[in-house]
Length: 322
Image 1 (cartoon, rainbow, N blue to C red):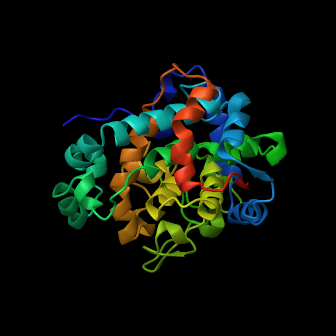
Image 2: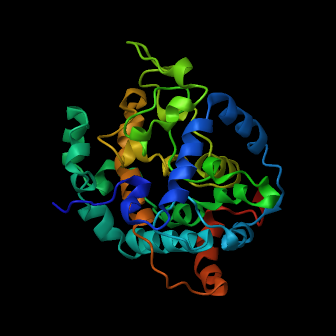
């Protein structure tokens, strides 16, 4: 079995020249993300009142934005958005048959992650490929669209969108108002203990995990605010992307769950049967997201020519609300 050597969003952190920037970003994130903060940002940004723009207009805005949480990439985000889309395009479209029929679900998991999977789901995963587990999906052409738009929510760090600090725009996400899982990056630093929510919600009993009913499902959880939550809402209202694609948009940065930095799969206490069903798809998407660092970038005109027809299929309006 091929073993993955990445560890969440910080897979090359130890050797990164950007170490101090990355650590400071996560320190601020884990201290300042609270239930009240998240709800306030949802109230503001879910109104989608930043004007109507098409995807390429927003895409171009990321030409000047560099993600402070990424330890091995200091290119503007416009490059990563294209890189991911292209990686997934090749992975899911040009090699679609091989992807769906031959991709072993078991091979998506590192050994210590696999040990955290409930026996029921170990059996299901072992008996299926991506194709058979999601055999209700007949058209996969939405997948590279998700890859193309998945990081566009990072425009919240730009002036027109409120110029939010990067600690509430980029990086790994996690549930707020719940115990802070040891599977989060920098857990050992203890930054989270300085959060205003730590003593209030660091509780668990037979019924509750923080404020949430156990196994309520991640769709019913308030996640830390970031680009995932924002682009999910934009596309939920402005596109026809299938529910599986919307799920990928909302949880692609939820690394302590799908690809933890420390230990095994985190926040199992909140996962529903649907989350377990979706986990292999998130991990397959993550492979295209992380392993897409080619610096060979075509012109914007070439990008538009290739992706415009595909985007038009799932985002039919010329401009949507942001």
